[in-house]
Image (cartoon, rainbow, N blue to C red):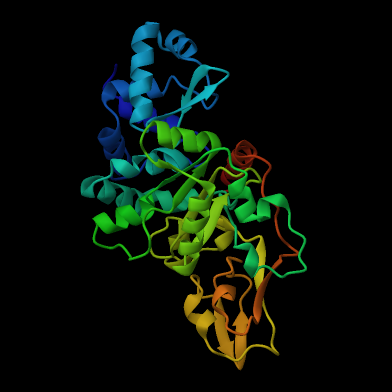
Length: 356
């Protein structure tokens, strides 16, 4: 173990698609010190993104298997690494800072850690999130807000996707919890972060989240919609998670609403809102409802498609049903898998560096 365990871990985490940048203040090291012991920080660097058994990690680290198994289990319980069961085998792999360590800290976060997260976000996190110009999330509206004649792909059918999930977990939104701890939070629902499949099992087994039924998950989505939250999942066809995001706390949406950055850096808008001019009565319900201020009134309601997320929140409050969602003709389809998206992000970041 060396005195540079935390810096070594930071460099390791910075290799992920969404890296963990070095800052002038060193706040990123303070975050790691709050999350990891020195011994845990050292061990974390011997894992890879590929799930593998403890004996492989023990050989790489030069440690006894029994010792490593105990430490890996302890770290998984703390949300410091990822653990999964496959073919009756326990597999471990490293967790990035985002999406990973930050979200897994939802039950551990306190005011001090929240302040450190906020400082890192302003110093480097926001810039890192948008560094590739490839959005990490796709927006998934409720199906009833989509134009009735639209033929949908399976991944665009939110309720159906939820019902088909093998296992589902819910936990608090770490973004809103962070803001609340700093007395900056909103009054939107807190327990809204949904995970599915292997990710859900990890949350449940490590008591980071609780197991729920598909009907409970759908109810959470509908209540989130009523509260004006944007439904966003990983920008892949495979359903692994659904965040219900507010423009005041969400680390991605704040980039758009508070710092004026292009939505394409954060969220893939698969749909766009279309307003029927003949039906619009200028009630202005949609004006107040839009989380990114994409709607203005010019005799009728007008949508700025460059800002529109295609979330459907405006359509759900239109009394005249003058608004519906349609797939964007210039839409960029989600990636097949999260791993494919990660590779694309790394390649895009590398190209951007070469162009500088």
